[in-house]
Length: 189
Image (tube, rainbow, N blue to C red; front, side, top):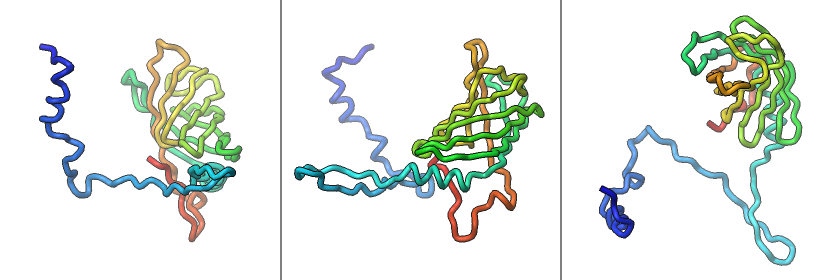
């Protein structure tokens, strides 16, 4: 039975608010936003200044991004899990973007890759430039992510292809560790 709109505020006031319920300790880490600094502009108007510098972060990512990644790819249609290796040969900062060049082996089939990583939002577009591609992927698609290189989705070139999921982790080698006294690059997610 539909509820009349006039009765909706009364129902909401009588129901418990879940957001106000306390969360169990250890299960939640509160987000603390960076401090916003106010400034006085010409003419006495005031404004806010963003303290995050995406251009400096792009330079830091280009320097400290691990050059070798490994993981797996699985199609959304439920096919087999395929091993994946990513080698980044070049990472060049361009404003708040990082231009990535290298090669990716999917199921033993290696092809060149080119991508863009946004240092402000961790969005990634990674294009496979080879033909044929491993893992039953079709040329013309791209991996897209909002979590950097760690988790991506395959955007297939045709609507009849379901796409898939790529999960990567950096390989631990002596060359991928940050220098002593310098923090490692860590994603926001």
